Image (cartoon, rainbow, N blue to C red):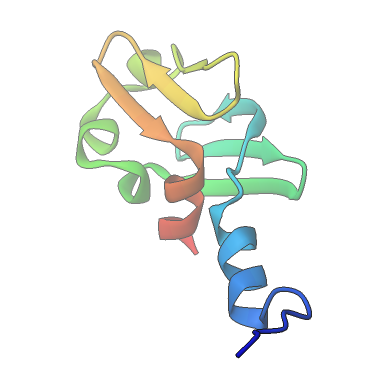
Length: 93
């Protein structure tokens, strides 16, 4: 018996969309939040939502955020903290 495929199912399409990495174009730091700019827009995330380590850090330590060249992650060298952009935005919803 032959199986005929007519293209991906809606579940397969949704899985591919969910698997697409979310990349940041830039990040900004304020006293109360991290701002992540992506192709989809600008997202303001309170420090308490980012991580416990960032919530405890002072403004100077937070302000040293470095966006990875790929846009996939954010690194705080003074705090030895790394966050992936996609999961960060997902948890902040």
